[in-house]
Amino acid sequence: MNSWTTPADLRAKVLREWERGHLLADVMTGAARYPWRIPLKVPTAAELSAHFDEARRWLRVLAEGGGYRLEYQEINHRQLGRNRLPVAAWLDSEPDALALIGKRREVARFRQLADAIVQSFPALAGWIARRPLRVLEHSDDWPGLLDVLGWFATHPYANVYLRQIDVPGVHSKFIERHRALIGELLDQVLPPDAINRSAPGGVAGFERRYGLRGKPALVRFRLLDGDLLGLTDLSVPADEFARLSLPARRVFITENEINFLAFPCVPDSLVIFGAGYGFDPLAEAGWLADRDIYYWGDIDTHGFAILDQLRGHFPQAHSLLMDRPTLMAHRPLWGREDTPTQRDLNRLHPDEASLYDDLRHDRIAPALRLEQERISYAWVQAGLAGYEARKPQGG
Image (cartoon, rainbow, N blue to C red):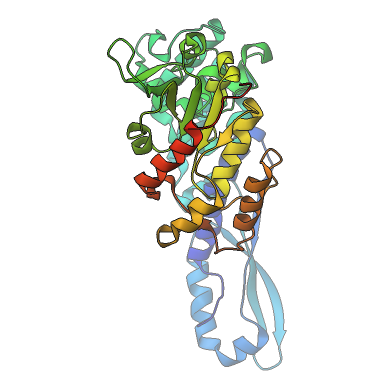
């Protein structure tokens, strides 16, 4: 088997340039690609001697491939005498290249779309050159996309929910489905003062970045020594939670929903269903600064990292059941942490820091993890009884 260039190889070479978006980008940038010379891999002198008939068939197939012209070079072979071998294929024009890969119709459509887009928003010309395949990918969506861009351009910081955007012929589901693309485009067409650059791009930060109202962050909590108006499991917007100033001396935070629901009754206390690394909603509740806070997370590197982050908002926070005795008492229930963190944590207390170092350096077991829901309920009750006996801070 040889590796001499075939017509299929030439088509594949041109198709790769198409799939990288380069051929469509040329339409926008006017890059002088043509005539386009593509070097060929041809038989060596030794291969000609050993496989002359095969080389002749290869040359015939290559010459009959069509869609390109061949550049020949004359060689003087010691045994075979003078021969002409192709050394390159030439595509003299864009139509030749497009015909070779069957993309003439797509380029015609791209030109139509690009003209319409740039006519509406000249600032998108550079984006089209960088993302030409995206233009074609959303070929049928552009009328709606352009109308949505127009709405944002005339309604900066509208402070409405996405559902309230009123664009004739465009429903909110269309906007939701295309948020990532619309965000890319808005970054190009909106003036700098109409974009909240502190909010991330993409789907996650879409509402905040472009002046819409987002779904409010909710804080879910339970009162542990009674109920409030007959309600025991409450979820309220974070800004409303910040204004509550609930009459509880102790606040527990746990990351597991079942642990949250089954949390034992503790006088003068409430439990909050945590949110991993997201404590910003709680940080707005200034009244928590005067409460004893206890965080219960997994005994693994990320559990301690979350505790460290919580203390950035509430320095008085304690850890709950995240200690060496708890870990060692539940050895049969140990698991593995998928992607342990290795970073330094500066807000841990000495006993916590010691256990964290042992975990991140695999001194006890590789990637060791004890999930909080694996801790026995009796151990939880005993641990809480110990915390119950503590005096409140400042007491």
